[in-house]
Length: 347
Image (tube, rainbow, N blue to C red; front, side):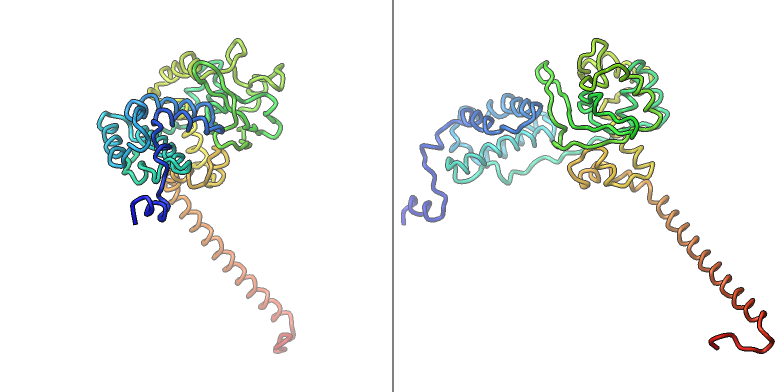
């Protein structure tokens, strides 16, 4: 049996002419198939292709990409100082591209599969105290409400910047998060939240009056939080003109807007919120993701939970003892009310 017959028999045969297309040409076709990407994700893919994939693989035919070459490329990216998360992202893009080539009959197997990837070490998160949140908000001046909103609701920055007046229900103290904005190549792009799911987040009582003043006179379609000229509150503008100066003034150097999302999670957990509540508030795709990010904060409450269980047991035992004492007193009283020596009913 010749090699061609063997390949046909085991399902590994591909038309060699189809695998002569270069990786550079194929990457463009692959990206065209990603029609459901958010603008920010598409931008990230384009950046990965331009910076890391096309320089190494662009001129090679699909059939010329070998598994050992992919492994060597990933090691080289790490050696050049690229972060582990960025190396993994570059691998994801190349692997998805090659997976499509396999499905399209251009390759027999994906050469990027089973590559050993660098481990991502998450940087330690910074959680502000209530007093630090107050200090930051005060230093932010007219954007104090934005600081409080981020720190107490846990919404992503783009969700805060995209929030419209009509999505606030101050009577119920709820904000519906169903839109987000992002800055891509200098322009504002609107889309759904990261998980494509709308959610409702609670607004603390102390912030209701401040938000009411902020949106007074605004149309439902206008932004709750905006620049002085009513335009969208771009992240770059907000950091330069409000957030970063407030961080310096409050002595919180190194803090980013995303740090307020972490702070909201820690404040919610410290207040007794369970993992499902925190997941819903933050808009995570799963409770597993919430636990991966913030599970260590629940460990800080183990003593508190143990004390509550101990208190519950003590209360239960005290109630049982009281009920037993009441029962005995009742029996004694009934006995004393009857003629001497007459047995109790049922005896």
